[in-house]
Image (cartoon, rainbow, N blue to C red; front, side, top):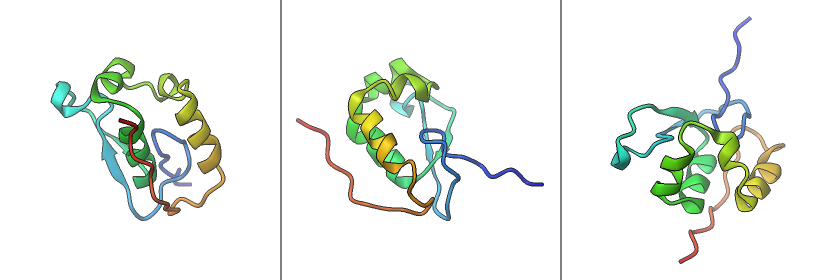
Length: 92
């Protein structure tokens, strides 16, 4: 039996479109990538600065402590793998 690959951030099975997220941003020396849904990827970058992403590193549980991201993860948990919706922009 083949195990489905899951999104690094939300843990749901991946759909047709998969993006690669650098847990430590490339601009901060990151080389490793993790598979994520496009909506999860956009939400990460709309919620956190590169400095904040670098600090959390390869630890999605640390990012999930953020109330805004925790709310997103609860909302997206039961959506289909190919679900898409507009992503809110980062607050200035």
